[in-house]
Every structure is written in structure tokens, then in C-alpha cells.
Amino acid sequence: MPENQVLVEIKDLHTYFFLAEGVVRAVDGVDLVIKRRQTLGVVGESGCGKSITSLSLLRLIPPPGRITQGEILYYKPSAGDNGSVDVINITALNPNGREIRDIRGNQISMVFQEPMTAMSPVRTVGQQIIEAIMLHQKVNKAEARKRAIEMLARVKMPKPERTIDDYPFQLSGGMRQRAVIAMALSCHPHLLIADEPTTALDVTTEAQILDLMRSLQNELGMAIMYITHNLGVVAEMAEEVAVMYLGKVVEQTDVKTIFLEPLHPYTQGLLSSIPRLDESIMRGEKRRRLQMIKGMVPDPYTRLKGCPFHPRCPKVIGDVCDQVEPASIWVRPGHMVRCHLYAEAVKSGPAPSH
Ligand SMILES: Nc1ncnc2c1ncn2[C@@H]1O[C@H](COP(=O)(O)OP(=O)(O)OP(=O)(O)O)[C@@H](O)[C@H]1O
Ligand SMILES: [Mg+2]
Image 1 (cartoon, rainbow, N blue to C red):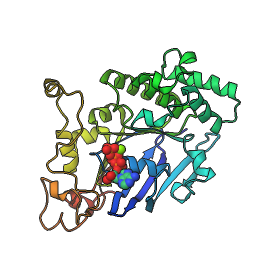
Image 2 (cartoon, rainbow, N blue to C red):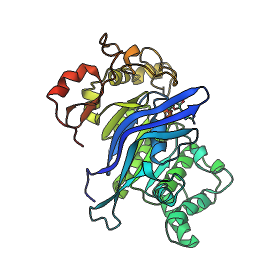
Image 3 (tube, helix red, strand yellow):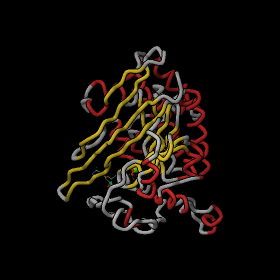
């Protein structure tokens, strides 16, 4: 399968929640590209729309939320793996229809923020993985059980022939997350969406799970959309990084450039807020959420004129940033930023390129 081909393209996606109190613009014009076999890291403070973007991709938005605008295109690799693709417009599918159910959990699967919510507490690990396999693959129960045990062994679950008959509550947090990953990978998806998959784990187990995901990615050749607050994890896992703020992607480029040459003042703020390890240890903190940038994220019902980051921006340009919303600017192929500071670059700037 050729690398570097686009697998998913999200264009101008808007997902809103229509509540009695007002409209929550959870995703408000997101553009994103996920390439085959690549890991895209998605970062941003709490509430910026990371999870809702990924749930939109699977058409799992609960009412009163809905996708109001934009497109999600899935370039589905052909069964013969001969390089050809079928283009599926995910936003046009019936959210309960056969087509999306065939994609969900099979071609695109998800590991959620909290492993306990991903598994039913009243059924064994094995029952749940076997069901996922039988739903998408034409195999009988005995064969599905064999594959489930193989998958549990692959995610380095101790004694998989025994653990398969355990209930989720009988497992430790790390083992539970391994089971969830085994379930998500049991159908060999083209894309794995991992939404803070290690937040609930201690640092050692987190490192093991990250290693595991990387090696399975190489082995299975899948893309990963890795959602996290933790820029250290992004540096370790991602090739591309998208930085989100208030429902928009404000910067996207390769991982090296994000760390060495961040352009958006918001990205710069996130990077300077990474706690230094020695300082965190002194304070006895194991991990910390990113929230060191001056000011607070505005409440989700507010719609700000101009750039959504302008009230908190240390480089705000008067009469511009509070008036005009910045467009996506490609400062060079492969580096997009939404910020007026770089408006000059766009005049002679290169065209977008994936
Ligand atoms: N079911 C819902 N009903 C109403 N608003 C919602 C719902 N789910 C999410 N939102 C709102 O949508 C916005 C984006 O939420 P989202 O869960 O995508 O944030 P996030 O970036 O994943 O945050 P976190 O890092 O805390 O997981 C937030 O303002 C949130 O309050
Ligand atoms: Mg989230």
C-alpha cells in the first residue's frame, strides 16, 4: 500500500450542539488531513473540540449535536491493496446505516479516553472482542475466539487464554487498556483513533502502551489519530501535528517543525507551558493538563469576532485580530497557520499541499 497517500480528509467541518442555553460550536471549521500509515497528533486545551472532531468522523455525535457543514472524505483502500481507492463521503452517510457500521470498528476504530466506558462491565473481555470480530469478519465463534486470544497475546496481555474469560473489573487499568486496544485492532483497521488512551494510566504503563501502539502500527500498517494534552507524548508518537483552539485547527505541520519553529502564538504558548520534569517532580506532580496560557478558554456559547485567540494573544494586532477572522495560511508546503501575523506570507505563498 503506497505511503503518504491521504486516508481521511476533513474539510471545513462544523459540528454544533443546539441546546436551550444556546449553540455550542464544538467544531467550527476544522480542516485536517490524515495520511496512510501516519500518526497525526491532535493537541489543544480541554474543550477545543478534539473528541467531537473524532466522533464526527465516526458519525457518533449524540443529539442535540449534529454536523451542520463541511465534508469528511474517506479514501478507502481497495480490498486488493492495489493502490486504488473508493472515496466515501462520511458526512453524507446515514449515521445508523449499513455503510457507516461497516466502517466503524472495522476500518476505522477508536480507543476512548476512559477504558471502563469502552467495555461493558457485565460481559467478559472475550465475549466483547469475539463479538467485534464476528460482526465484521465472516468467521465462526471458535475461530473468532482463536483470533481474540491471538490479538490479546499481540497486545502483550499476560496469559491471554485465561484473561479472555475475565470481566473488565478483574483487570488492572493497564491490562484493561490493552484489552480495549486489542478489541479496536481486532479487525485490522486502516485508522485507529486514540483519544487520550493513556490518561488513566501511570507513567510506566503509559510508556508500555505507547510502545505497543507504535509496534502494532508498523506491523499492521495503520494510521493513528492520536488525541492528547501531552506534548511529550506527541513528540514521541506523531509525525504530523494539528493544534486546535476553540473548534478550529490553528496550526498543522510536521512534528519537528511544531517543536522547533511553532508559528501560532497559541502553539508557542502551549510549548512554553510544558512543565519541566524536574520542576514537576519537585511539586510532586505526575502529570498536568495544559492550561498555562494567560486567560481562560471563553465559554462555549460565545462567538468571538475576529481571531478566537485574540483576547489571550500576546502578539495581538490592534484593529485587525479583533475584527477579522484569519484564514488558513500556507507559509510553505506542509505548514499551515491561521494567524494574521503571517498574512504577508500568503501573498507570495505556496499553494496548499498534502
Ligand atoms: N454532548 C454534548 N452536549 C453539549 N456540548 C458538548 C457535548 N459534548 C461536547 N460538548 C462541548 O463541545 C466542546 C468540545 O468538546 P470536546 O469534548 O470535543 O473537547 P476536547 O477537546 O475533547 O476536550 P478534552 O480535552 O477535555 O477531552 C466543549 O465546549 C464541550 O463542552
Ligand atoms: Mg476529549
